[in-house]
Length: 261
Image: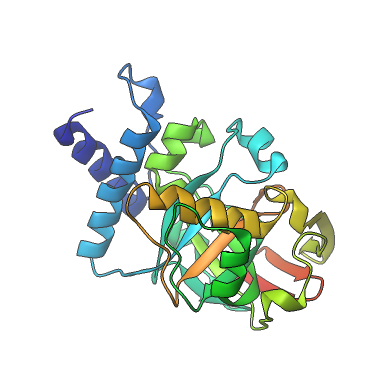
């Protein structure tokens, strides 16, 4: 795919985000688009965000759990970039009615790095050694693609369907909790909605972060000290709207909550 078309598609997705309008799936338009093409499109979209004054504060892994893969019909992980315009504090009101188009919330474990990680060759032990702490998190994903009719190339091009996210106010060392067996409870409007465990995300959230570091390494991109890394959902995606309240609790780590307006 030539550079001109890559830039045009990245610009189209950026404008869709700004104007809160969806576009037809890129994979439905009759041209060949590889996953690598899609990553270049996402970088153009990111370039537009940075030019508008945002800055990168981390990265996310998406489509890691079987529940989410089956829901979206996408059967491999992807990654996207997090910016300072996306992050909210636990309990803070999140203005999805002003910022997002077709939001869905998912409970995750966020990693805060204290050392750089550069793949390939990053192991789980390397991830644990590079992690300052883990924090409960809600990621509220969004798609600029009409009706979430996405293939892997569509979500990759759309910055892994990044929307907004909220970090809890409790953090623990990754060595103080079993990240494979830790349980997650998600409540919506006071009712238990779903449960999950760390193993739901590629067997362990640590596996997810190692996968991300090694995948990005092939593009010459590293994970950096101080960055937030969202390791992937442990539960199914849940559509949300203004007026909803959600809370996630992760055994051994803590909780996070968010009110949508």
